[in-house]
Image (cartoon, rainbow, N blue to C red; front, side, top):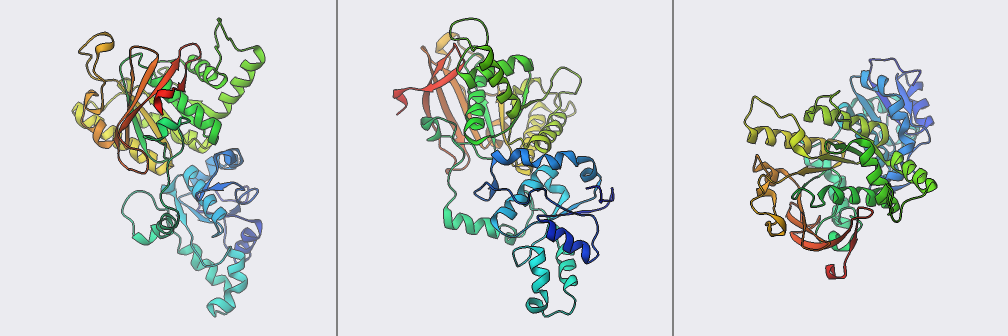
Amino acid sequence: MDEVKKGEPIIIVEGEIDCLTLMEIGLNNVVSVPGGAPIKVADGKVSASEDKKFAFVWNAREIIEAAPYVVIATDQDIPGQALAEELARRIGKDKCRLAKFTGKDLNEVFLNASDDFMVDDPSQVLKDIIDGATPYPIAGLSDPSVYEDRLNDMFAKGVGRGFSTGYASVDSIYTVVPGQMTVVTGYPSSGKSNFVDQVMVNLAKAEDWKFAVCSFENAPEIHISRLMEIYMNKRFFEGKNRMSQDEKAQAFKWVKDHFLFIDTNGEEPSTMDSILERSRVAVKRMGARGLVIDPYNYIDLNKDASETQAISDMLTRVQKFCKANDCHTWFVAHPSKITRSGVEQPRPDGMSISGSMAWWAKTDVGVTVHRGQDKDVQIAVWKCRHRWVGAQGETVLQFNPTAGTYTETMDAF
């Protein structure tokens, strides 16, 4: 990056030989990726276990942000395209252009240009490829050919499922898909925040996901202790089954490796734009794949619009963030009214959330966490936009108040 002229477009290639090739034909501001393409790729995307290897993007953020645009010209094989996707996710797809070509890499295209393209000047072939780079595909108006590769992959493999919540009974009605939003509702003290925390810990353990957490009702140190308890399945504070000093250190390191906390102490405004901007930093810095906003009613809404319109606009911005950054967002929202007391309260759904019908209309998945008369907690899906993600239905988990964890019951099967 020390060869890059700040403020001019940047070309990112995969290997050093590709970088040297472009430099030899007279192109400037060309860089290669340290270590080449990722080793672990699943379903055309970089495995979350490779996230730490992308620290170079964060380290070069000032130069990247100063560039008017970035051309990504990685190899055309599966690892190379997964690399392109992850680079664009962290840099920002709105800043990126994608170079497509026939051949494994740019050096191979250059060496074979005379035979394949019947040209006297192979360098012009590469220059045309870079000049012909098109805006990176994001949600919006696109030619169907942009999605041809993904369409062919779906035809061959099927859509599949989202990532597991860690519970087979819950997975039958709800899985977690990057780029989507889940609205979680339930009465106070029903366990909805604990459920989201549990799903995050399960995803971090199983898939090495990283998360940005905006929790208005818990100070970061309290939330960290709660995640440590779920991770160790032991108490943080004094009492039965308390974690040891070594276990505390182990749990804290694990939370530190997987979570960033969006401070809500008043130094930054509690607007959705501010939250999403800091969440984008979490994507760039540690490759965050999940965002939690808990709960919505602390967010400063647009005072120039009605509450209904302000909530609708807010959810639209969250949806755009999810798609542009390939992140899953959990949005916790309280019901508007509690009409009955105790365990006789009717189970709320998306229509019960205060302010706007948009809670139902704009979410991809809607989940209610509802506590019954005993330790059983109902997990009910009242909306699922795509049938391959899950389905409307309900299951039961058992809550362990000692460590704040959930387990499956035999009644769930």
